[in-house]
Image (cartoon, rainbow, N blue to C red; front, side):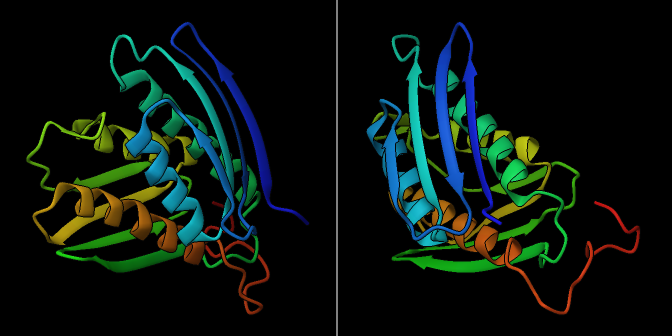
Amino acid sequence: MARTANIERNTKETKIALSLNLDGSGRSDISTGIGFFDHMLDGFARHGLFDLRVNVEGDLQVDTHHTVEDTGIVLGKAIREAVGDKKGIVRFGSRILPMDDALILCAIDLSGRPYLAYDLNLDREKVGELETEMVREFFYAVSYGAEMNLHIRQLNGFNNHHIIEGAFKAFAKALDDATRYDERISEVLSTKGVI
């Protein structure tokens, strides 16, 4: 069974169409109007081996906030929908990922309980046209949309581009790990019997 999701979300601030295939090959078609954000989402798809299509029309004349946050909300919902009932999946995933000077830890629990722990030391206002404070807002929105525990921590690094890119790639690898099937797991991996 294909683990896919197609979601559209239209507000006065953004119009978003997103499709996600968790069992893809890393193909992407991304257009948010924010070049660096497109690059990060492309890296997420490529390194997670997800197929991802994102088209966003946002109020960029205001700033990047609504575009980035709303994309995070929709991506989170797509992850939750594509994962489905969670039977047979590993549920937990983690990765420590190097990106030149940056070393980023990401850990995920597809628990059904949203929570974000975020610790990236970004000391520039922007990378490209993306406000660096929006990186946290994106991951917060994803964690709540997907109903996942998401921990992202910087262990080393000083280059803001590398730190952010490392976070997106580590998130991709951890999510790929968490969504994998394990033949030893026949139901939901929880003492409660549900997630």
